[in-house]
Amino acid sequence: MERRKKRIVKLTAFLFLLAASIFVMPQKAFADENEDVTLPTGDIKPMEPQQDESGIDTYGADEGDEFSGTEYELYTVLENRVKEAMLAGNEWVSIKDLKIRRDTYDLSFYYGYSPYFPSDTYNRIIAWYGDAYYTGLRITNTFGTPEETKQIFNAVDEKLASIYKLMNNSMTDE
Image 1 (cartoon, rainbow, N blue to C red):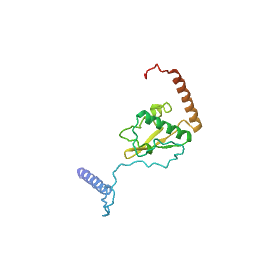
Image 2: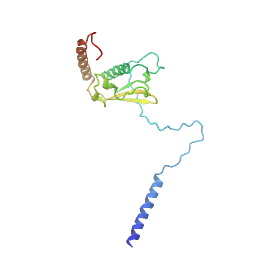
Image 3: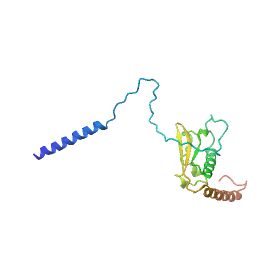
Image 4: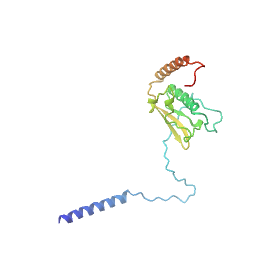
């Protein structure tokens, strides 16, 4: 009798799971016979909000060419754009015009190379992309207001100027 109850419980649980899986299984959907249907690729990207690009310079006159400079040149351009955006109180910087290829440049930690954005600021600037190119930078300014940010940038400028005064032509790169 006890064995029979266990079998009934197991059979009931199995039937319940079978019925639940039927309802959870995806249903087949058929597209219209229209030949212009584009199937999704499964590559989901975050939607980029509209950006205020006032005061942000563009790199190069020909927007058709991909960026092909050194990492230092790229980081300098990005640093200037991010600084301008932070001083203007903007949270987004468009970099579409630079045409920076994701497979050529890694923007994951570029700001760690800047004296304005030390490496412990990894969560302040996020690179967004679409297809093969980076499209924008999202900035979380933890320095404070644009005025406070300007004071921090000025302090960094003063420190850099004092370091540059110590340098002369007889020194090597090291």
